[in-house]
Image 1 (cartoon, helix red, strand yellow):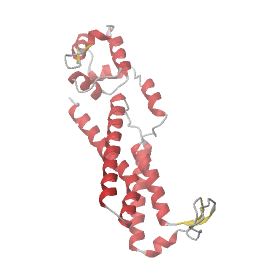
Image 2 (spheres, one colour; image 1 turned 30 degrees about the horizontal axis):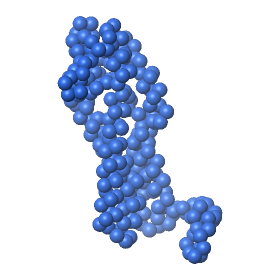
Image 3 (cartoon, rainbow over the protein chains, first blue to last red; image 1 turned 90 degrees about the vertical axis):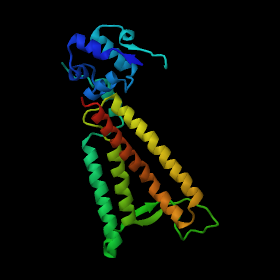
Image 4 (cartoon, each protein chain N blue to C red; image 1 turned 135 degrees about the vertical axis):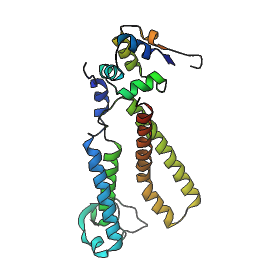
Length: 66
Length: 168
């Protein structure tokens, strides 16, 4: 799965820590998601999308291997 | 900015202990280890504890040809004390929350638990096939704790790698 989390976070000028606090996870989890090392749960994905006021599909996309 | 751990905290708090229990668990395991070594070295220490208990199993003097279930008195000694401390200590250490708990920590916890159970089952299988007699019984007495040991090692290693790889 690919994601635009880092891009969206930069647009909103959030640090990883700030974004982590908004959605209720650790900063390391946000880092892991941005690096593609962790696929977030549906709940977390929806929370992230709500923070950026965008549909979840704009932030997370399936890639060819999924 | 505000913290919003409520949903995940609700999920985990039903079956995980508070983080302070991890330290209590390690203390209990340390006490169990020290007491076990002391009993092994000095016999008077081993004989010191003798607690009357009720046993739910037939005693050694029961007629082996007649199976019966009853309650009779028994004495709990150093072995029961060590096993109790180990049981409680292992559960406290293995199933205490982290100070900062989120879904990735829960993911690591589940993965580590599955890994530990599988490794332990392989050990049980190999022991069953290649070890016999009294040694087999000794191994079987250890295996409930080895599951927890494997889990604690795997979980803490995975947690360390996760935090190190995602520090930047």
